[in-house]
Length: 296
Image (cartoon, rainbow, N blue to C red; front, side):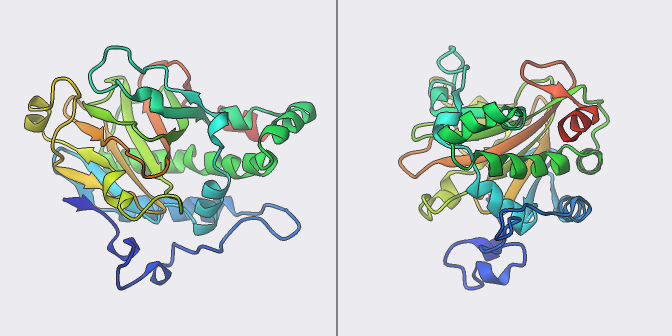
């Protein structure tokens, strides 16, 4: 039922210290504040994690759960430099009449480019007053974009899932789900080609969120039997909400999934990448001239 990395479950006999890709002390920042990393080594790590994951065929074709998908220092830095709640906007789809979206205003999100596109000294200084970690956060999220928006990662994902559609646009969303947030069973917008979501649990999350905060996958029959007022249904498979994990699947008419309503268990921190076959609001071009613009 659960898609998980057994050695990472809290209280497991192995303990997280036995897992090479979890190191609570790892960081890219030196004592003098300099941020260093090796893009080639990062790419090699992420591509290997994608390639090595099992390709699941149930409850629909196809999906994958990735363990240790990010280098440990990058994962830790993303958690430590995750934007504060005041940096986000509420999901504009809240209460729009769509079944299962009644609580969407509990989801707060922003684009990674809301962080990276702040460039002038005056603008950065103004942001630092609101978020003291902002200057460092820019370095961390810039590193994440350089890896995850790379051709190497996209090609590995598309190859793994047999995706042949050409991506025209893509987005990189950072999300903070508050208590009460949930989404009913849905297959996603048909203009979306593939989705990749990363989990970032924190010390504020009690142990049970491993089993409650992950994404549910559903059969067609479960979608048909969903509660018509809330959009919820029984899960067929469920992702465990564990550190340094992610999942991905190509979007089809039958890629039914949902998110259980969060109830007083701390924030549900995630970030998500999507590739689209159409021009979408808030998305950016799916070619890497964008990266050249950001990184000079």
